Length: 333
Image 1 (cartoon, rainbow, N blue to C red):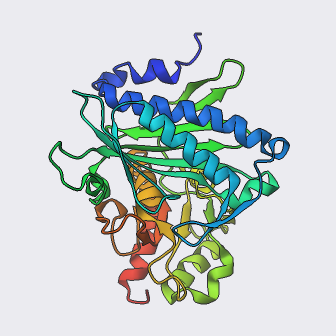
Image 2 (image 1 turned 60 degrees about the vertical axis):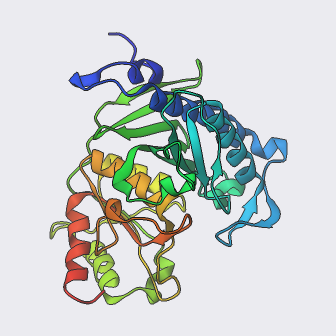
């Protein structure tokens, strides 16, 4: 039995009869994966290199900036610019997108990134991640190129994430399919572990910041209470929450269940960033057979009006997302 294909081999193959991906998209996915390999090393050695701790600055979202936030942001932006095909890049760490001149003749692409999801975990050796969403770039005569990002999540042509944990995992979705790779550290290459990954229709776990319970609507409290009390009328779900969206989502992708970060009385618009987190993961989950919702609307149908727009997020298996939407329809949310 041969070894699983590498990411590079996979991206250049016509898997399952589908057409190969466009060369520009392949270049961007490979650049993100290569940056992920480098970042995995940086994360692992951060306690030894002085890369932990805060810079003293605050980012666009009011979050305290950590040294690894800056390192990951700069590394990823450099990798994207180096492809020659990315004309617009937006980052959670930047107040506004950056615009580059793409290589002549290459159809431009636009990329949104959350460079270091779960960065509060850095000082305690917790799980971290990187999230990305890729769209077609602006036309050559577009007066405001960055506005290519302000469209519905359905306009994404690919999305995915890198998970930095006991294993470094690279997941991407494109052409309606999701694929999972794991880094082989002996050769510094990602190898395919799950082609056309499919998530269970229902699960056994849920992930939520339970400390926000007093500020939730009755609809959300009802859903969480249902998860606590009964799984298909038999046993309760298990709570699994890491503080890193990528890690909690990856568990949900593999095992089924639900991740939820609803709106509350303090954050009436929700907390999850639409362009950098919710829309990319929504593309992945739908490609794997799951769903992503605000409780009232499909995440991928939301059109961003601001680069740092936030949204409530319920993401996971179809059955549990159905419970959420039913609760909202019944008028308590």
